[in-house]
Image (cartoon, rainbow, N blue to C red):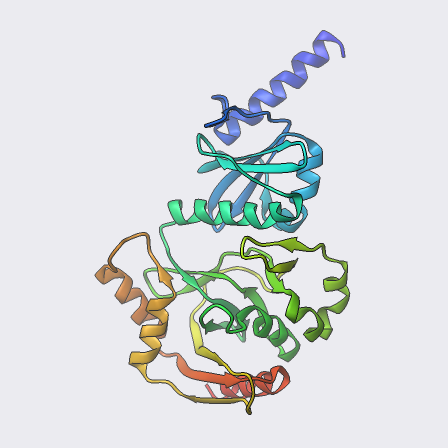
Length: 306
């Protein structure tokens, strides 16, 4: 490389570093980070810069999050991704490095990015699935194992747009928007979603910290702030017919509160007002189901009535 070319390349790197707010060396508690390339991701207006040791690591971890990538931008936070032998390490800037086997790296990166949003968002976060239909949203609430991701993905075949299966942002005026991470499908759901079969079979397998094998798929809807039209609390059973029963406002509010995280140890009056605004004008019910195709029929009927 000529000296002029080197100076031009060096200037470009310096400009990129200034744009992402990383002019000071990136380090972890283990020492200075080895940075060969980086990506800037937009997580619902929270910008995180992910610094990779080399292009191979970026190619290995980024495909699941490529839809979040934007042009170099000053980061609200930085993550460092390194390789050491047969392990991959991920850390927050100036934080401790967590080392995992390669199949565990993508789930760990998602966890780290979620932590960034927790620390920087001004919105209330809900552990819920979000779907769009006719300009309004369907909010699915439920405990772990209730089948939110599987049902939300299956509802695409019933005319719903999948916006998020995991984290939903709630504004203080009561509108909702998605944190558009890829949908996470556990192994038991792979054979149930015929409309996504080719995509599921072509997706890589990953191992979550809870020892579950998952695959990540793209979303089918556009992000944006919308009113909630319907709220369903999921009650998954081992057997029995699917049905939607009435859920009181108090029980719906309790379910919403149980799914919420606002960064405060106690919920402020503003959080309660936001939840009240979210439920205002919405229909809410409890979906009891064991059979996925029948559940799709019941959910569609529920949303057609209001």
